Length: 314
Image: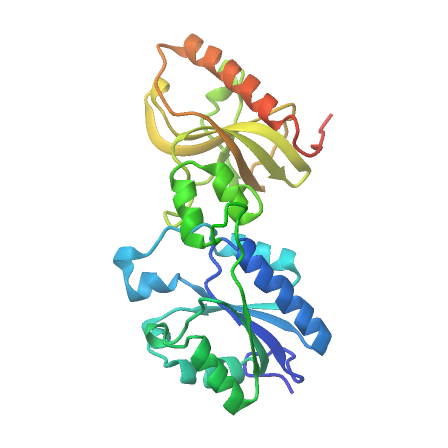
């Protein structure tokens, strides 16, 4: 018999619950263990996450910008091989649930949970009172297993966390962010038509539609990037921010792709930030700007030279 939300969970499920902002290396450890345990039991693996971020409801003044927006997070869950993802609307009503009620009505009642995987610092329910001890007590009385996973650390011994990754991105420390994420920091979106000004100086750009204000972006500047397009991966350089030389003060994301050109309008693209080349600054004129762009390209190509093979549109 299907459960209350129509998933085929007649034999139960192995479940994990969390915000999972960033789906970083610590989260990935939880997800790979989740999938492995579910396969061993012969039941589906289920990730339960929330939108919006709980702090946007509980304490909006301290709610963080997000490492991964909803669609980005769902794509990473899919890559991890989980069977199902349930995105629960986080509302004041849900925030008021006691841990016991959340377990009974949501995890058991809606998702037929037989095993719960959580990180070492996990907590849910009103005031995050559903800590590990509470969960183990509930598991004993309601006959489900609780598996607690230890933290994952970087090489310097620092525990990986969404907070630490946000701090690294905000500071422009892309290497530290990538170490925590297990991949480059990225932004995704749809390609839209720009003003085509870049074509006039020999640097046509791929322009992204405006990104949600909820998405955390690194500091304004010029970056070496990998560009993930429907045809494959390419290399390029990206300008994040205004274009003061031409009097444009709107914050934009525009990318010049090396050695490729096509009609990508409407396509979904992912931009992986590899290295920051410089900050944003005005130039005396278009000739000075073109000279700097040539130097930016030289640096970006050198930094990206050891990247994995890229696609070709030749």
